[in-house]
Image 1 (tube, rainbow, N blue to C red):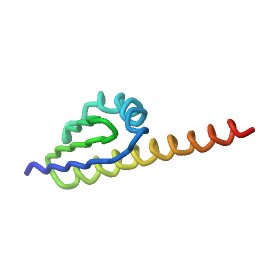
Image 2: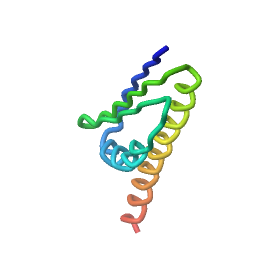
Image 3: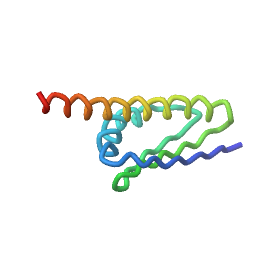
Image 4: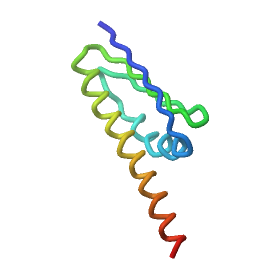
Length: 87
């Protein structure tokens, strides 16, 4: 059974940074899943194909966590940068 998932994230200005940070992860070769990540302006599009539900769950857990952490790091970087400029 082929399972498909597609997520769109409105990441705004962070989209390019997140996309470039996660590109190396796309080079990993997985037997039971195929993942693509696209950037259209400020929108990230994550597409995952899996051979079964277990593989899909594992892939989504990993990718959603990576996107969340990268987005949080971008946000933290902007906050720190703003505070440093105020000094």
